[in-house]
Amino acid sequence: EAGVTQFPSHSVIEKGQTVTLRCDPISGHDNLYWYRRVMGKEIKFLLHFVKESKQDESGMPNNRFLAERTGGTYSTLKVQPAELEDSGVYFCASSRTGGAGLRETQYFGPGTRLLVL
Amino acid sequence: RKEVEQDPGPFNVPEGATVAFNCTYSNSASQSFFWYRQDCRKEPKLLMSVYSSGNEDGRFTAQLNRASQYISLLIRDSKLSDSATYLCVPVRGSQGNLIFGKGTKLSVKP
Image 1 (cartoon, rainbow over the protein chains, first blue to last red):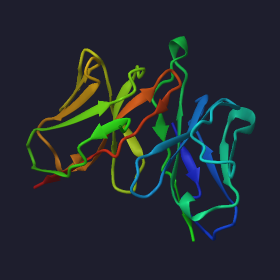
Image 2: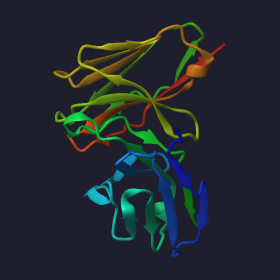
Image 3: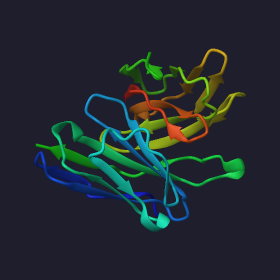
Image 4: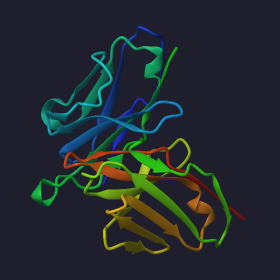
């Protein structure tokens, strides 16, 4: 079974530019999560999709971040315009929905390392 | 107060040693708990789930004390390959969002 994949693995952009990150979850996983770790800090939750619907986007830092999951398969996270403080590692994770609606183990992708100059 | 508190370490131990990590969490609504390990510049990988009754997986034993909001991980007979950062991860309520601390760094030396 293929794991969670993310693209690109690295991105270096200038402040003010736009970047789009992509995540392909494990096949059959309805739940898709985005997390971020900025340098020196812990990994923080950004948002959660259940299929194509946003279940919780309470962790999104501001309206420069836009996440989509059209069709309930892969997801994109767009940052527009990027700022210096957006630099960090963006992780995607996916999980099944188990019995009684409980979310099961989250499997992480390798992350996208974003550097905004 | 941080949502997850862990001793950042590093814990430097010789091969074969037994090492214990502790963690406290502040979200009393958390129902599920995990230990993840993260190698340098890699993604977090699930090590084991943590159950109230305590559970063991080979050389690893996890314990949960809900009353004290305290989680522990014991590693016996440490291997060089155990060197990593260990993350204590409660789940936020029923939503499934993971709450991370900064983790505890373990370095196992020959």
